[in-house]
Length: 247
Ligand code: B12
Image (cartoon, rainbow, N blue to C red; front, side):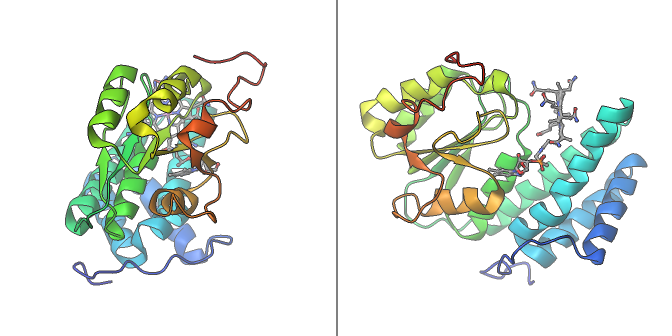
């Protein structure tokens, strides 16, 4: 794909990864283990250019991260390799955001991770995928205190707030309630991503394509998995699995 092209390659249905993709996951994880930042970055940039953000993330970058995570789980080693891989992916996705941004005139999508949440690569992937379709976004990154999230939301009046929580500890119901009750956010859709949110929570999306859809078509009835902020915080699903409210 030409670097300055307007359209990313069309996302394709993701089945089991093709051999070429498995090779790229292998090459990337090997470069990370060898702490070879130049090779890892070169591979990631090439993959992003060739496949676009959605396919690159889904088929190669996320599997490579999962593989690093599994290894960390099993052996508690390779922490430096995990950091290196994360950093290379973060840098490459940021470059896509700045290269591809040509914002249209609609309100932005606000992307954030709640207080204590350091896992933000999926937010970065979503911001890059939004840039590819020229949807403006504001990426506030890791560990945003609740008051700062509210201040930013009321200042920007975003079309969507997307919150990523990787663990139940950072997925707090109280923050959703505050957003829901704020009068200037009644036109804002709240979309939730990450395994921290209880299963089947209203407004939850399970992967990058669904998140991209929910953030770019938030007002269409056909949207799946997203709900107005007012529906979300009152959802009984927003309780811990043991039945206690969070917050
Ligand atoms: C990279 C990474 C880090 C980096 C994050 C860097 C960054 N800038 O984001 C750093 C090094 C900072 C880090 C820190 C920690 N980490 Co960490 N980390 C990871 C790793 C390898 C990838 C995270 C990620 O981006 N996942 C996203 C994708 C790649 O994961 P996935 O499983 O495919 O995602 C699923 C869904 O989330 C969804 N999905 C995937 N992509 C997208 C995108 C969108 C938009 C949507 C909506 C959905 C979606 O589809 C998948 C299928 O369900 C994971 C391993 C893993 N499997 O996730 C561990 C992992 C999440 N970390 C873990 C841990 C324990 C930690 C630390 C506590 C380690 C420590 N002792 O310090 C800290 C916690 C910091 C904090 N307070 O938040 C555990 C979490 C276990 C748990 N459930 O509690 C994991 C699972 C590793 C493990 N196997 O133990 N981590």
